[in-house]
Amino acid sequence: MNISKNLPYRKGVGMMVFNNQKKIFVGKRIDNQTAWQMPQGGVDDNEDHETAAKRELYEETGIQSIRIIRKSKEEYTYDLPEYLLGKIWKGKYMGQKQNWFLIKFLGPDSEINLNQKYPEFNQWKWADIDELPRLIVPFKKKLYLSVIQEFCKFI
Image (cartoon, rainbow, N blue to C red; front, side):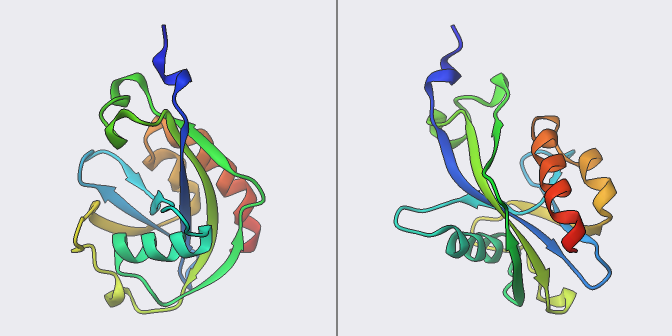
């Protein structure tokens, strides 16, 4: 029996942050040295998605100088692979259901600071949007392709 189907999705947000060169911010995960990802995180109780996106972006990257360009038209989901079920989020969720935000970074690169209270990334870089599907963990690839398709014309 697949227990994951009985678990709910965690409510989350994702942030596609781009700079003046139309490059996308990605960080290399501390817990998976082969995986890069765009910032993302959970939505706290009584928190709206935009507030959560700004908070998570700051908590993961130190970035505050931003302009939100748009919010995704739909919620995107991903399922955790079997080997991560029970290990992530204390085993309470089968994956995440996320609202994504396209965000223009307005500050200098020196504003980016991964040395946060609960660091998630140990490296970061600006990547071409076409690189993203190759950089991401396979179980998030479909979600990334959907977000790229929705946002690419607004960058």
